[in-house]
Length: 194
Length: 149
Image 1 (cartoon, each protein chain N blue to C red):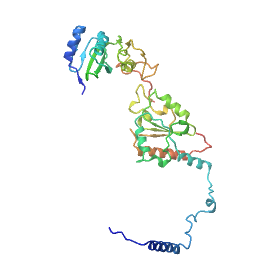
Image 2 (image 1 turned 90 degrees about the vertical axis):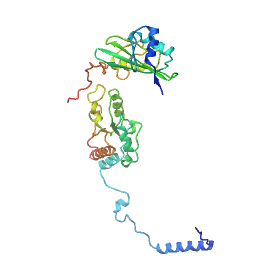
Image 3 (image 1 turned 45 degrees about the horizontal axis):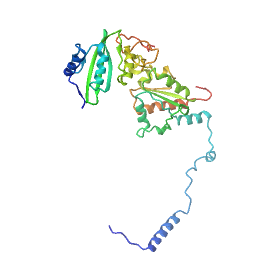
C-alpha cells in the first residue's frame, strides 16, 4: 500500500474546509425533541398516587435474599446470569443479609432440619416482603412429600405469594413467575396493609 | 489403580491368627461379629490398612448386615468385610482406630438404630434429637407430616 504524502499546509487546509462546511450547515439550532411535553413535565413535576409511585419503586427493585435449599437454585443462577439476565427487572443484587432483601425465592427441597433457619431468615426480612415457591418440592414437597425428613411445601413455614411449577422450572418460567409477582405488587395499596 | 486384596490369601492369614469362621467371597470376607474389633486392629496395625473407606448397614428384616471397607494407601489395596448381627445386639465401635469411622457410625446409629459400643460421641447426626424411630429400618412406619389435606 502506498501512503499519500501531504504537506502540513495541506492538512491545515483540509481541516479549515471541514469546519467551514459544518459551520454553514449549522446556522440554526436543532428543534427540542421534548417540545410535545406539557409545561409541568418540563419542570419535572408529575402527578400520581402514592400507591402507584411506591408500587412502581417496589416492583422494579425486588432484591432476593441469598437463601436457597436445593437444586432449583441452579435454575435461579441461570436466570440471574447474562443469558436470561434477571438484572432487566432490577433484581441482580442478591443480598447476603435478609435485612436488605424483600424477596425470598424458595428454591428446592426443604428438610425439617433446615426449616427453622428459613423461618428465621423470613422473620428477619423487613416489610414489605414477598415469597416465591419455585419448583415441585417448594410447592408440595414434590416426590418427597411423604418423607420423614422433608417439609411438604414451604407454605407450612412461610406465606407464599406465587407458586412456580416445574421440576425444576426453566429460567423463562421463573421470569414469568416473577412477572406475576410484579403484577401482584402493582395492585397493592398502603391503605390495605398486607 | 487401587486393587482388592486376594480374599483367599487374606482369609488364610486371618484364620491362622483368629481361628475358623472366615468365609471368602468374590469381593468381601464374611466373618463373625464378635471378632470385628480384633480383626480391625490387626488390619490396621499389622497389614497397614491405614484408611477407613466406609461402613454401612443393610436391614434384612430379621438381622442387620454391616459392611466395612478398608483401604491401604501404603500398599494401594482395599478389603471389604461383612458381619451379621441380630436386631438387639450392639457392635464394637472402630472410631478409636480410624477417626473416619466416627461420623459414619453415628449415621448408622441415627438411621438404623445400631449401637456402637465404645463410640466417643454416639448421638444422632442427620436427624434431630427427639426424632422417633430409625427411618432406614424396614419396619419404620413413622411419617412426620400427613399431606392428605
